[in-house]
Image (cartoon, rainbow, N blue to C red):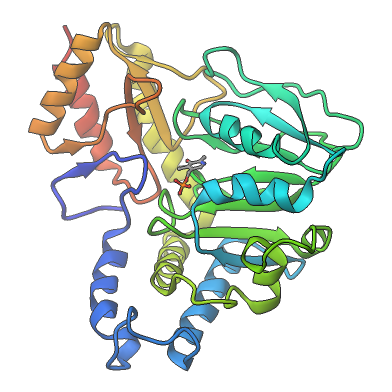
Length: 357
Ligand SMILES: *Cc1c(COP(=O)(O)O)cnc(C)c1O
């Protein structure tokens, strides 16, 4: 997890990717696997791309520990599309789905679900979204229970999936998928836009239990049915072939790094450097409460907006990019996805220390 780049990219997404993956992709753009044709130029029905699809799925299954009861799908859309497709597929009029409300993204997911059925808020963060819930009141018979494993904007993360849901869990894992072991038990469907930890934007990885998909509405258009992706192996129409290639390369890189347990240990160590500093600082303070803090997106505030602006200007001067918090909440945010280099934390702490009042 080192880089030869001097620029540090703290972007929340699209975000930093492993250097070796980007270098291999440069080669593959020109010539995929020695075929004499680039990845962007190969037919999605040809044998060369077929091998890319095979090895990508195999790497995802191996890294994620995903068995045959789950389908691995590549949907040509970001996570936002699933805010709609999930309730359209699984929630009918007169039915209830349970949602855990932890911030901006779960709010958007609930807004969509309300168009199809009843949304029951089973649990919610505190008003300022500094915590993940510790208890839940599930409804009697929900179709599914939805949660956002990592709140990218507020910087909170579930330590473990919400316990005790009386229905399959559906998880928006966009900003922490494959940053730690995948907790598959109890899940009917996990979706993740690729641009935080897996690859380019505009494509999402879906890990779906086949028997849960079998309960979806059958009268939706084909591209809005998970079952179409299962039955046709994400090849109903031309998929994002480059995105699939990139996700495969990133997963192979994760495997080389020692897999998801090793990834988690490194991510925790990286985030700890920053949280430890923030907890000691009298100038900068972490937004999220201990126990709910995200390893992926560390949100923090300065003593004033002016101090934050000064820090951002100095960060740019030192080659540290995209530390500004999300436009909806302000403040500062350091996104530390899998490929973010550990040495970058020391540069950030040095910056914060130098930019004190
Ligand atoms: C980034 C993000 C999204 C939105 O992804 P799009 O690709 O823009 O649709 C949804 N949920 C979470 C948790 C995210 O981090």
